Image (cartoon, rainbow, N blue to C red; front, side):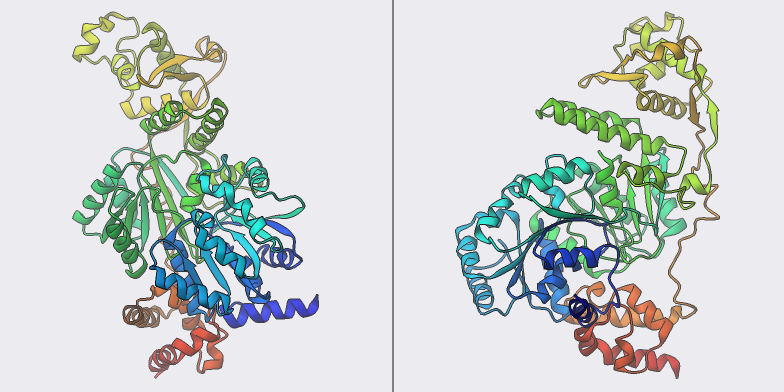
Length: 603
């Protein structure tokens, strides 16, 4: 066992430039090498790929990796090749001749790791190929796609158990960043795991700050956030619809940002071009739907912004986890509103899915909304969803500046009374019009200006009324009765509130939710220990090499490696191997160029 450990560390250092394993990596790797099926739950950026890449190098034969997206395969293969590891993918982008050449290399044992899409497993060409190979390991990446209870279910993943017949001697490892207990059990059933080991690392991403506020003027709010904290950074902005993606990208360009759009409605050529721009450019912002998701492998994304409410905590965790994969400080910023809740709820109810699924989806959405409305530690509540307990983090908006609460019992009673007096037949906007004494044609036509509740809520703004309604909805005092008309109905539990037997508190609405934390919450730029000028020179060199070789800058060296160079100022090729992320292959390819820049800096 000691010899195995030494060899694993040697493989890690020589190929990847790391000194030690992190989280549960070593236990997962040993489980695989013992021939045991393994489930690995690790946070985004936690090093899941190493859990199968190291065993692939240790074992004879070829490691088969099931990956959901072509762009992700390409990034992974390129990264491995940069580290001197022979890897390849087979997918629909390749010609028949290219596939035959890869088959030749696989049969002659020149390739150690092969990436495939789940859809490809059932193709005759692939099945014939697998019969010729000695498959040492099967890795199922983004394994939450296997489960109908996961947040990105894909039907083709459910047939992956058929690989057991094609590769009967290969253990299987399922890897994902997000899977609650129910999802993990379903993954194990779908993949036909019988006796298996399960390793769950902490879901915590302490380098990410969580910032959530009510939507007022979304473009202004987004612009203020970027200007305050991320003026020179790369980031991702998520929107719910394609139309909104296009609009926000155009607006950001109008404000002077290098912003591009990405969604499934764009042509394949445009999506590929924008993905390449995102990989190559510094200081770029991608405005996207969730179509821009699992294919992101860039480690230096400094912020992820949401302009709409995600439909579940799993989605939110997965999407925000694309920030700060290098471990450096990053921000997850979101604004939301009542319309998001109604829209997501309507999408659930209008689907033809089974009622059991709808109930589960409602629960997920309710928790997502409660996370937004919470006045306590965001991280504590987020991790609590995954059954992980922590103390208050001191590093989210609610910890840095505890929201002020006020007694909104009277406002809740006024709203509930208005729902009752209008027959539980109307939605938020119309009910607020009645409460605020609007004289619009619809109110007058229906005679609702003669109701006792007409005008009794004009002392507070529409935005505050929306906060009241969201909290009533979150706490199940009201429900949406009809998803086509989006009208509210009263729940049984509202009776004690109407009678004044209990209190109702909400967060005080302020013009700038983050005004109190702005002094504490800086951009957290990763200073290179007083050598920022050297860092910029190294980054410029990396950019030049990237353009010459058509390799993304972060694949050459991540920011963390550049900062390490600034800190340690290596003088020789051997010294360079002590830098984080510098293995033998990268040392030989790029070492002399980077040492030259460091030497010139010291003169």
